[in-house]
Amino acid sequence: MFINFNWPKIRPFIQASGGITLRIPKNLNRESILQAIKEVDKDGFPPDRQSRKWDVLYENNKYPPKYLISLANKFLNGVELSPKKFSGGPEANEFLKNLRFTIVSKTEKEKNRRLELWKKIGGDEATDVSPKVLRKFGIYGGFQGIWVDKVPTQKFSDSGKGITVSFLHTGKHYPDDLSDDGLIYHYPKTNRKGQKDLNEINASKEAYECGLPIFIILPGKNSDKTRCVKLGWIIDWSDEEQLFLVSFSDNDLPNLKPKSKDDPFKLTDSKKGKKQITTSRPNQTRFRFDVLKRSGSKCSVCDIKIKELLFAAHVRDKKADGSDDERNGLILCWNHHTAFDSYLFGIDPKNLKIIPQNNHVKLSSLGITVNVLTPEKEPPHPKALEWKWKKFKNSGSK
Image (cartoon, rainbow, N blue to C red; front, top):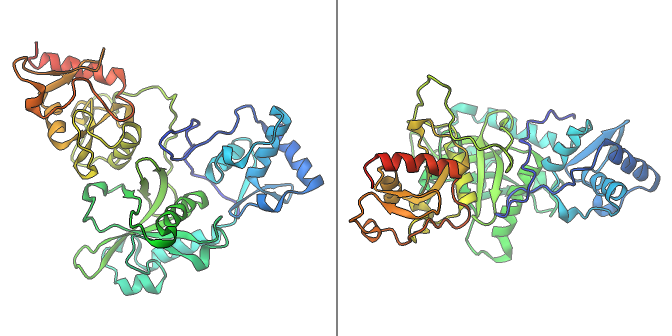
């Protein structure tokens, strides 16, 4: 089965937060991959380098994608690239696809099986499904948050322990992480025996690597005895923040715009002359995830670290056509998000000092515990801070 990828092009830089990474040397080219193919034709490949999920199809022969990249590096850079140095799955596939190679999926049958199950339970109308039906179809089978059905997926799993089928999201612990376009799902922290939490996390990452959709189990729309089900695709994660990002889509992985650390900063989103609708923002889940991943899970002006109390604030807000670029974001608690939007304090872009609107008001009276902006990781882009600082000064500060 040939695959027409809608994969997002993975960010070609190392993400310190432990999410999706790509470290394939930029100088690898089609000719070096062809050299690798010739060597495999001659000498074969080690059994432990067999791909469980994907193959490169070339002249009716199949080759493990990651091993080809490792070998190609030997011809151009003098050493076989360790498989631990770069990610397989969509990352390696996208790289090879850009070099005009055809990628063949070994998991297409499982993907189609899940899409058929999605239709059987009602698709978009699956708002009140009986738990018995979900168990019958193997969509969900227990009380844990992550359901892994080992039987149909263990042959594709690197660990042999199966691949995630569904996430249970009750909304009791992190209600603000669900929106119309997706879900930020928190890693399990149950401390069960046998490293079950870690196994479920890895099984979920493999769903991404295999290009498999997962079912998101939510409370029923009209009854607490039924379940609402959405079809989602894991598109990113952060080991440091212990979060998965899931995007909802009925048929295939959403065609997301590629992101790169080197992308030009975009302060505004709107088209000239059009008003922004702020009641429903289709990218709000992605924005929150990206800002948490970039800035960390702590209020940038106080000591609050409880995720339920943290918000991804737009520096240039949506009412002013502010973009959903994560560099236009800042993690703040509820109180300081409100105070920031109300210009009760400002942030000097030159030195990141926090300045109260009224010079006679102490920062401590606003609950601010630092004199300089202190995100756990990176501050917002200087252009965003400059825009906000100008608005702050015009609001009446001295």
